[in-house]
Each structure stands twice: as structure tokens, then as C-alpha cells.
Image 1 (cartoon, rainbow, N blue to C red):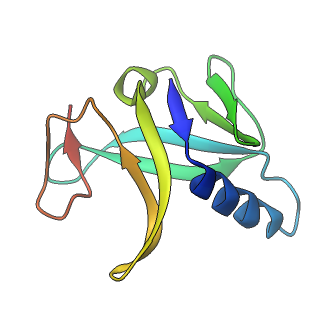
Image 2: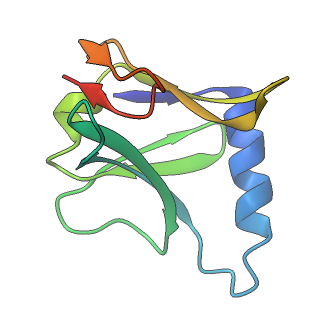
Length: 108
């Protein structure tokens, strides 16, 4: 369904380790309405999967995706990029038909 690069997995594990409560056990990836093109990605840590979530484990990271978002994320790759213009997570998604000028929202 979704792949996580080695670089992204390493960064996710680092961020999870910084959680003072130790309650971040999964990375939740979702599609939300918003932005000028219609949808945007949401990444965040959660305690665990919810009923109906799709769950994968890759490179030592557990990822959960809700049933609404799953079809939009099939075949996507989560990467972590440290570039001149800044560092952050990047999602390469073959399902995107178009993106806004800033690249923050997408049309599927």
C-alpha cells in the first residue's frame, strides 16, 4: 500500500523517541480536505491503530491509514528530504492528478 524509505523511517524513529510520554507507537497518514487543489496530507503520531485502519510495518516503523484515505495513498512513498530549501517529509504519490503551485495540496 505505502512504502517508507530508510531515511524517512530513521527520522520517524528519532521523532518517536523524543515523545516524553512514550505514547507515539504509529505514524498516522491521512488525506484531508483543504488547500487550493482540494486535498492535503496529514502526518502525525498516534497511540495505535483504530478500528478499520490499514496497518503496515516497514523499516521498523508502523504506519496506519484510515479507510477513507487508503485508496488515495495506494502506491505512495514516504521519504524524508534534507535539501537546501529545508528539511521535511515528502510523499511521492502516483495517484495525484495535479497539485497547487506550492505543492501543498493535490487533486486525485
